[in-house]
Length: 400
Image (tube, rainbow, N blue to C red; front, top):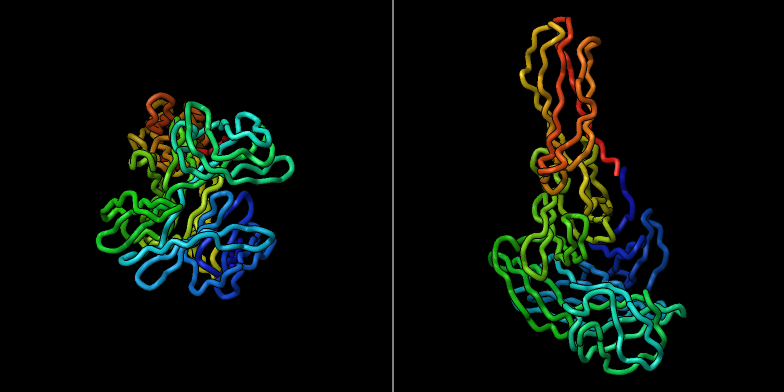
């Protein structure tokens, strides 16, 4: 076998920095593994689970799992305490829930001012004027003493977030503030639905219907940057050979990214779960297509993509294709360089080679369009003197 990495035996994953998590329903253990598949730690569950987890999320503090139950789906929230993975809450959704994918909408920010023990007003870098509202539970920390604290918000005014009580510990500028608010559940019942649900109470907020939300096997939530000029809080899900970035505030697409989960000519490779850390996208699969071959594994492993734009396609055309061998005539070489979002790559060098000892490329390298984002680069081949077929090869390389 080749290209395996985390060697998971279950079809779900969660990622935290450089560690990978899997919950084993047979052993009732949460495994923490390295990128090479080595077990770093095993956390026993305080409550046995009776069915396989088909999707897992990590919000920076809690682990969330989804399992099938009679007539629906059960979503559980777990937290590691005293080296044990403890069940904190269970939400059951019945009847008529058939789901393979869910995620939890969660946010990470930082304190912009120190709050001392007893203080009940905090300031954060982000979200104080949008998603932090009365009733939100914030997790502060760790501080310099590795202390955490859960605090309830009672009001927000300007940059001031007022807590229901004073903090027990001092938290410094830059300490984490993390919280969650909504669940997003894909439901394959009927034509397909997407449910937005209060993650604390289980109360339905909004249901969106349509075939777009049918048969979704993997999704996640992340703050996404480096796609357009501004970042967005996005629900990211896999549909056919695409990752779709859905802005949770507007329910409009922020971007659609092509991924390589296809065995030619047309066999789709299932993505069982998704996670995004920084610009890295981890897709859990039981096979992958690399360098012209399909590799089928006996375990589940991640296939890596990136959020940031990179060169994905290069196509070249030549006109005219036949030249007199006079050392004067030229053919125009037109190259289109695209990224994984289907857009033209901006201001990147394209290098050319030819196999004629007399003929040559006049502009080398040529740069892709820096103004209109077409991905277009153009050069010319000047004819040689021999009657022969000339091969011209163009190469576009990602240097940044």
